[in-house]
Amino acid sequence: MKIVTDDLFKALADPTRRAILDELTEQSEQTLFEICTRLSVRHDVSMSRQAVSQHLAVLEAAGLVRTRREGRYKLHGLDTSPLRRIVERWPIPHIPEDHS
Amino acid sequence: MKIVTDDLFKALADPTRRAILDELTEQSEQTLFEICTRLSVRHDVSMSRQAVSQHLAVLEAAGLVRTRREGRYKLHGLDTSPLRRIVERWPIPHIPEDHS
DNA sequence: TAGACAGGCAAGCAGTCACTTGCCTATAGT
DNA sequence: ACTATAGGCAAGTGACTGCTTGCCTGTCTA
Image (cartoon, rainbow over all chains, first blue to last red; front, side, top):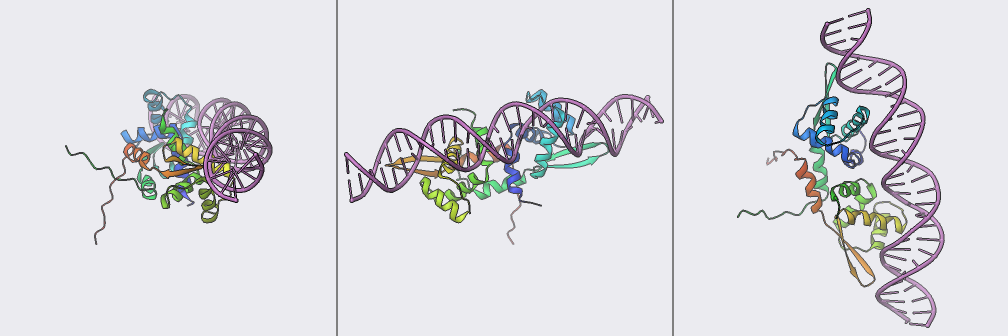
């Protein structure tokens, strides 16, 4: 493995990839075609299948997407744990919660 | 203001800008020249002054850096609160802490 | 076994980005 | 007033990136 740090932020830099993460957040374990159709229907993103495939590869390199083979299907799942590095690197000030 | 979401992730995509955030985390309220010298000395990043200035502009557009004028100096401070949007958007699974 | 279906590889193109260079403005000190 | 200092603006360039297109591999079903 390389320096995943760079891959992580590069992966997050694209709006389409963030939409994919949104989609996988709502329903995990989707195939490439499912993600394609859901992107076009719900996020109004019209793009070729290969484009989405390349985005998924970038997300996988960043560790944000884990895949597993199931026959001829390839299921894509979400893994948000790499995001923890961000808030650990630059601590976010705590907001006093409003318990009114 | 526009959609700051895009600016935020674009700002984080560059390693030099992340180094700047690291520097401001350690010591806030620095001028452009201070950031330049600290980058070259501590992060081994040799770059023109204008390059760093442009990076700071990107960080400011993302809301990660707040500036204030002080005579002929412009002091740059850190604001990590925009990062909260990230972990709110894609919740990070809680790690059971080890109290052994 | 033939065809449909899910996915992958690689080349090419256009737009974006990071960085430099040159010049300009404004404040501070002598 | 002159000069040094801190910073800003704008054009140009090389590299990277996102997307397309065309073709290929592997799996399932009639």
